[in-house]
Image 1 (cartoon, protein in one colour):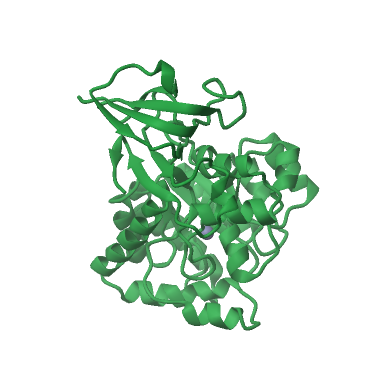
Image 2: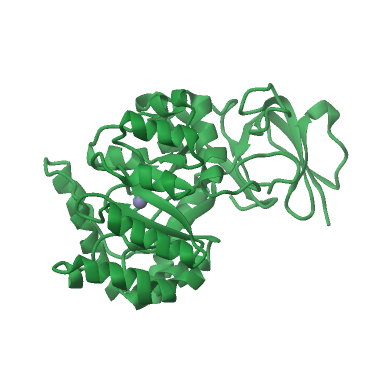
Length: 391
Ligand SMILES: [Zn+2]
């Protein structure tokens, strides 16, 4: 079991206030990190106090941040939605129905095509610093197509979400109640063994409060933990339902009443903001400042999907959150790392403290602030996961 000393870190973000400057980011200047042979962090702190290790690696004065935790993506799909985006950017509004275009292409694709697609976007995300990701079904909408999406996803991550209730399937447009029965019955039976989470798109044009409740409680009855697509396109019941059911996360949170903000601030549900969706649909931004000032826990994620947010870049989301959603650069980085971990109820990722998985990004920059200060620039120079350098 070889230990590795990472030296020459100009600025280390640990997300552990006790290790650094007592801010939430726990920043240590002129730092070092020791990685254990099992891929976890053994030690983090000022370089001058670093213990000896078997091998050493020089970070060259770069900033080091925890690997990004992307807690919301839709990466098991086939097909192309370029024409949708082109039309939308030429004046047509986004509606939830566009999902059915991707459903048709996904059903027609082979397992190999779906997995090759997934692998390609995961590689893209990794090269930009994402070391933990969640992904969902939701483009199959039949028992077999949903189950195979989850089987494929589970080969690449533990954070797999059953989203059979993405939209009503094309076969059930005249009878949504029958589709909810399918999702909460045979589809759940086939999907639950492959998933950790259950999700529903609670929105006009998708599923109403009663339908969403039925889907989530059925999933919970099978041991899945709820998360909810809530309050994205309009005000609605999603956030309140998520908090009431103890969901790990309410995702989007773009249209919130004061009561919604209070519920998130006082409950255990993380508010996950997905600015790539607002960017790609020219929609109004979620108000991160309002949530943070109320005391809610906020995560940032890509929502990477072919229809409404086709970016795999967490740094891009950080830049949007800082520029347009009222977050400070420190808050945005915390939300993209520790916040994402909280949204996945993980304590082993999203921080660089003893015992955590050694997932880290060395930035071609002296400070993490450059993630927002230099938008669109590929700053991830090295990416390590579980103590192994992958990029
Ligand atoms: Zn989504």
